Amino acid sequence: MITAGIDIGSMTANVVIMSFDNGEDKGTIMSDAIIPTGADSAGTAQKVIDKALKRTDLEFDDIEYIISTGYGRVIVPFADKNITEISCHAKGAHWVFSSARTVVDMGGQDCKVVTCDDTGKVTSFVMNDKCAAGAGRSMEVMARLVGVPLESVGELSHQFVDKPADITSTCVLFARSEVMELLRNGVNKKDILAGACEALVSRVISLMGRSQMEKDLIISGGIAKNSGITKRIEKRLNLEAKIPPEPQIIGALGAAVFAKDTFLKVKG
Amino acid sequence: MKVAGVDIGAGTAKAVIFDDDKIFHTIHPINDTWKVEAESILASALKKANLERRDLECVVVTGLVDDWEGADDYLSDVSCAANAAVHYFPSARTVIDMGAESSVVIRCDEDGIVTDYRANQKCGSGSGLFFDVIAGALELDILKIGEISLKSDKKIVMNSTCAVFAESEVVSLIHMGEKREDILMAVFDSVAEKTQALLRAIKLKEDVVFMGGVARNQGMLKAITDTFGVSVSVPENPDVAIALGAAIEAGELV
Image (cartoon, rainbow over all chains, first blue to last red; front, top):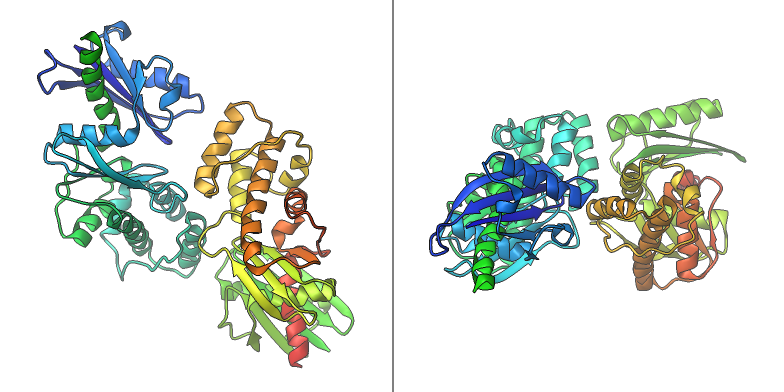
């Protein structure tokens, strides 16, 4: 049985194609793909699934069931069904780590804390839905301001020279001006990046404080690739977080697993 | 009497000099540290007024720097705004100040003394920077968005207030085929509604004065006027009004 999950997020669109022997098995990931979300959601959906298919010997029609998720989930024309990203993140994280009980998913615009039971079923969730403070976008803004690639922010943030710069603004717009003044005053870029990571982590920790967090903690989403964030979360909470090999596809992965469950039910 | 007011904002530095009955003002963007900008904006105002620093009897600074050695005193931008409002419009009792980063509503008395105020300190929506983001998303010049929005003939409602979320919402509105003037007016209406919520706390009293760089935006002025249902006055140079309020304070100190 071949299924696919497609996650249309605010910044990236992700696809996971899975194969299952009979549905009783855990299944395997055959292919995945990540592309930036374009202006045309339907076109982006087609492009990302084509990219994933190209890495296999499969044709589009070989996929028996497709579930879409993410903020653009309703605009995927070829999806058989859509499910919220909350459920998909829990399902996907549980597929990778069966010990997962809390998933912190940090994307471009939002940060979600989802707790689940031992089957991957959601038990609670909180997210920032009114304000982007605490979401990944602030990291992009800071990387561009200090002039380093986004991928190197984490590593550089650990190499601070003096101490992490104090960044007090909540709003990304205000933090940007605050950092500009720090740069003009000659504060080291690494100290600024460390300060930016500290500030973002504080927001995430306070969001987690509103959830019923339990171990094991999984960190997913694009920000999970930033050690400046993940290491600091671990340090603040005094625990070891689990990070999936490809943290950006967890939502799509969960959708592909749901696709198997749903397909079995539909087929009877 | 020769006095000056210097206002260091997040986007621009402003200075106003009172040379007896003549008024000189200068404005330039912030490129250096706040203190360096304070020095240089005062220097350029002095040059315009053809005066030396020693000619000034008092200099009051306001805005982001409160410890600049070049000033004799510091006064909060809120107090400066009230000073300026009553100077321009003696009947002013409510002031809306929107700068690059600020969004403040102020109640004052006939002497320009602040009786209450509310500031939007944590969130940048409603500030000039927010409009920069929106103009960027629409690929429009920030100085033109007000004028363009006045062509709007269709009401759209924005769901997001956060600049980061609003930017994505604007992009999706463009792809849904909405016209840019209607999108702009929707943004201005959403900011006016947020300002109205701030105003509720201090209870609006006429007359209302709108100042700060954003007050140059005709679309925002229309949104505020329509939302509040009152007429709103804008001083001639709304972006230097706070610096003028600081200069008034300097005059009073003398």
